[in-house]
Structures are given as C-alpha cells and as structure tokens.
Image (tube, rainbow, N blue to C red; front, side, top):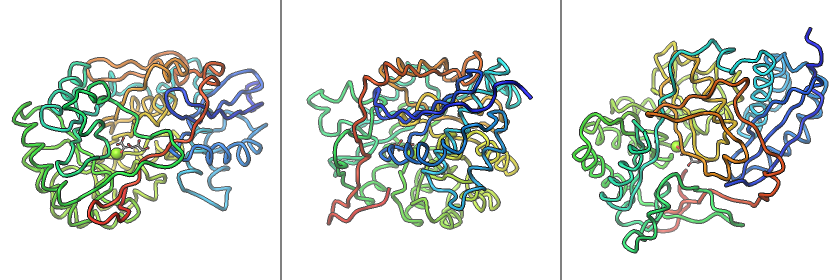
Length: 419
Ligand code: KDG
Ligand code: MG
C-alpha cells in the first residue's frame, strides 16, 4: 500500500471568476492535490452544501487510490441516489481522485484510462445571429478560430429573445458584435430573466436558416443544432424531418428530458442524428435509448454524470450500440470538468465530438488549463493528472453572486414553457 494516500483534507470553493463555479480540492496525507468540478448552473450552493455537509466528512481518512470503492460507497451506499446535485457532488470527488491517481503515477490521466485513441478531440463551437448575415459572420468567425464543426442557433423573426442567441434586436445598432461569441447565458441577478417562445414560428424558421447556411457554406461543414428541450414529440419529429435535406451532424435536446419514451416516435420519423443527455445524470437515463437504438450521441459531461468512473461505463455501454460521445462543454462546465471529459474522450474508442465554448480570461487565469485547441481538435495536455490547477487567492477575489438561466414563457399568453 502506498504511503500517505489517505484523504487528509477536502475543501469546497464557490467563486465567480468570469462566472460562478464550485470547485473541490482534495489533499492526501502525502500532499498530493486533486481537483473536481462541482458546478450546477444556477444551483451552485446546493452542491457545495451536499459536499461540505454530507460527503466530505465521510471521505476523510479513506484511501484516495480506491476510486471505484469510493464511488460505490457514495452512490450505492446512500439511500438517496441519482439527481443532478447528488451526481455532481459524487462526480467532483471522483474527478479529484482520478487527478490524484494520475499525479501519483506521474502521467496525464488519459494514460490511466487506456492511453490515446486519437491525436485530439474534435470540438464544435457556437455560431448564432439575428439574421442570415450575422449567422454567416459568426460561422466564419468560428472557422477562423479553427473550428471544424459548428452549432447554429438563430433568432426567430417574431420573437424578441431566443435562448442561445445574444444581442437580438441590437445588431442594427452594432451593439451585439462583440457579444455574439461564447457569451454567458446565466445572468447575475436575484431572479431569472424571462424570455419568450413560439414553437410554430421556430419550426417554420429553422429550415430556412439551415437552407441559407448550406447554400453559403456548402455540403461539407458539420452543422449542429440545439432545440433546448422545447418541443413535443410530434414537433420534434417534424423538425428532424424538415432538416434532413441539410444533413445535420446532430439535432440536440428535442423534448423535455424526463420522458425518454418519446424517442421511439421521433426515431420513426427522421434520420437526422439525435443527441441527448446534458441534463441526464445516470446510466439508467440512457438504458432504453441505447438498447432500442433511439439516439446517436451521449451529451453527458463528466461533471454531471457521476464522474469519470460513471461516464466511462455509460460510454462503454453506448459503444455496443455504435452510439458515440458528444460531451456537453458550455462555460458552466469549469476547466476542471472540461479537462476530465477530454481525458476520457482521448481514451475511449467511441468518441464523437465535444462542445467547446471557450472560457474567458478571468476563468482561465484562475484554472490555468493545459488543454490546447488547434485545427478543430482539443488536446488535454501531457502533464500529470488532469492538467488544471486552481489559484485560490485569485479565485477568492471574484465573489460569488447568484446567477440564473432564463425562464421561458409562451409569447401568446405567458405560459411557462419547457427547457
Ligand atoms: O447550464 C446549461 C447551459 O450550459 C446550456 O446553455 C447548455 O444547452 C446547452 C448547451 O448545449 O451548451
Ligand atoms: Mg444543449
């Protein structure tokens, strides 16, 4: 048994370098440090409390090397299983322990997960715009930054706001130009901002957007689109069908996440590939979707699906059905969570793509991630562990402030609508 590998200390930090993050730090008796990302966008303090008040007191003194046993102890050993807060808290501990194990072995984490299966992880960026010209400019901007796959979100003419499309209505005054790319959708405020929605207008407009984009950029560029869970099953089927001529890489989060039975109906109507799972947190959420071959990409990131230990099992299960990874990588996944997903992505065979919304300089100054982005691929780096650190002093200078994702209401009568 290695000396000094018991967990001696664990701390949770809740700060706002660029945006709110919850960060876990575990230290072994020998002084090895591991980091975990425990951020749940808009519900940060709940995970911090779950860790501080319930999990950290019971992991002190455990052998940091026994990752599987610790995972089972925290998951199977608890009466209350699953759910985003529980699984994010377990994920943070799991990530930190893998970070420690890789540092103890003096290798980048992907080496412990089987080694590199590729030279880097294909990533997609976020293009958006109020009109076709803005969308084209935004796609070009991302291509110039190196992206080889691009998610396209568009304003809908009759709506004065659409989630994922910043600066609607301001473009003619030139106010949105600097904000269009990789913006932060969670607004720091005491209450969520409210946005409006009209499914009919959206469904009528999206095929026009993708027709225009294909006409402008040709057939080769991989294009993705996110419906943010807003559709009914039959509306989702219609969208998939209407976008078939534009050959999407995937269509994401079509319907509300709770009812996965609806994918049977959607699948019967369209060959557009389907991605889902960024709000799933357990292998059981995917079970029927895999076994009945109803989806094509798994969206879970390491930080919301119970950690590297758990997501590895989800990916291996998906591989049996030729389903690939398509990991969630917005700015609310911290560089620690992002690095963990990248190391796993380097190692698995059924890697598909990762979302890569780039963090701002405040975030990067605190976490100093080693991953690099070049020619559309991200590489997690070769230093020992996850390749991410955490500057506690600098982080403490960015005070946590509540921030919320918007709430969505129907334009016609103000009814609260789905995410
Ligand atoms: O916290 C949720 C956001 O990150 C949301 O914008 C994520 O739909 C999302 C995406 O695909 O990044
Ligand atoms: Mg999404």
